[in-house]
Amino acid sequence: MTARGHDAADGAAPAIHVGIDDTDTLETPGTNQLARRLAGALPPGFAFVVALRHQLLFDRRVPYTSKNGCASLLVRADPGRPADELLPVLAREMRDWYVPGSDPGLCVAERVPEAVREFGRRAQRELVTQEEARAVARECGLYLEGFGGTEGGVIGALAGVGLLADGDDGRVVHRAGWQWPDDFAGLQPVAAVRARGVDEVREASSGRAVDAGLVDVGKHLRPSWRGRRVVLYVEPGEPGGGRAHWRALKLP
Image (cartoon, rainbow, N blue to C red; front, side):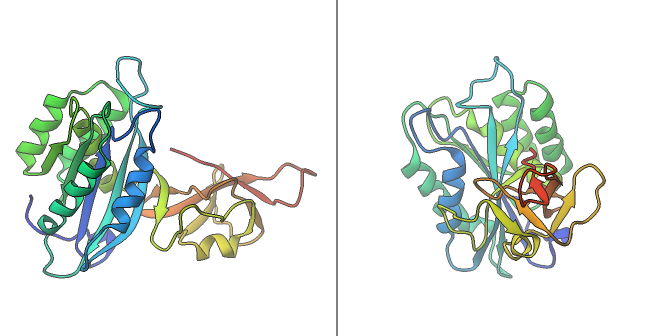
């Protein structure tokens, strides 16, 4: 585990980055579900902030369950609580979740070096290997472990940590205070969207902030992680197409 540190962009509380991948099969609950389970399993002294889905390289040479996504969790620790205390809890949950046919991996880090962030970006645009992932983690002093099968999930787990720390990638699949299953759907006032933990509603084409109106959020609220903030991108509703002034976009 790397030395304890703070993510200045996330405030004074120590930030812990968790990455998971390849945790499911076509017949079993997916990695996003496991991310929610991990969020609910944190011990006292650790607070869940947000869980993200990241899109990695979509290529037939890459084995994946569906669309090759990985997940990450941002956790804040009370002062003096090292990330090492989380490892047995997260490892136990990963082992309990394991199903034959999956190849799960787990990565946990406090400080995330640039090499790890670059690995995450590379995993989105080119083919990377398990050996590369393990080498980067070893050189940077990060915890990276596989929990069955080929252990190929260590690739996405390390990439998820890098992309989370980079702060400009991912779709929010869970937020502190959200319930699951979540009934926040359909037409919602912008104020209600903000009250759900969305830092900003922004028009995608112009980048301007949206402060009022009704937003069609669809079946589930799925904002994005941009600038280490939760941002919901929207586009204008269809003229004459109903009450919605805005329609939510689900960006990677």
